[in-house]
Image 1 (cartoon, rainbow, N blue to C red):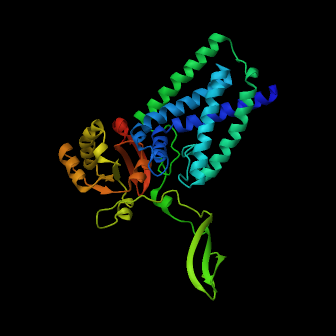
Image 2: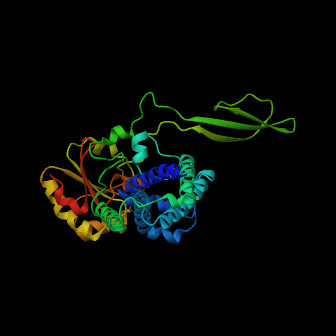
Image 3: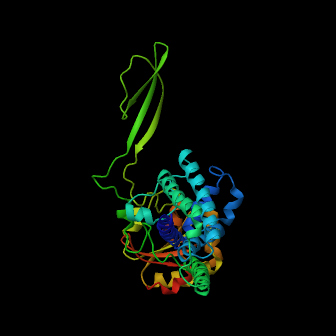
Length: 370
């Protein structure tokens, strides 16, 4: 039991720290996922949506800290009980999401898993991961007496406190700037047009079609890969089932549009383009908006084309332009896509023929070199 506890302690502690740090690197991204869970379509607790960011930071900080506590042996009973309650809750959540097909991407490892594996972690994969974690945490629960501190009492307490301080500082830092490591398809150096393209040899989805016919008064179901079956009977219905997902390009919902035309290709061919992103002009940070006038004027003076991208309507676009005396136009793009492009409202990108050369939080607008 002692050896099993040691192995479990190392495995669970390291996994919680890695998982927590990945989400703490992008707490805004995790908060968007929590909003999806809180929505009426999933857990039906929409009153929690305004608090998603606060919950996001607290959960991931607690996740990192628990991993550290377990490794150094700080307050073993509290740590193991906390780990058990957390994993039981998340196991239920991932099962619920997978079984009822509520949330297809769990967000357990942020965008890191998708970046490394080329696809998101599915809800069922996340559920299996939680079951494995639950197994090891139960070993820790029943063998908690074997969890001994690695250091003396003072050193253990200091390390525990430092883990709290570091986690909160790191979360605050990335919220005030941008993620330290960008795992998304819009990272610096990525080409947006290439990210939207489909390779010629891309894997196609495998879909099962279940055709129901009425043959001589009886319902008969025939399964095909999509072709219409030859049956002497009356067609009743058809159901489809996804057997295997096909290739999904990293970028699927980015566009630069007006109410009447798509200008994506036109702007992505520009060699000196500044895009000011605000997924919601209604919720734009006032301090950030106040910095846009001087910055955009300087960029235009230096030969850049400057545009804005938002999901807000025409009335709000005109209001923002008048309020802050902006001399560029805002175009339309999907809100979810803009939240993925940059974790800042507003955020600023420099593009050269569709390639992202620079990307900054509005707090760091002075760092963008024109």
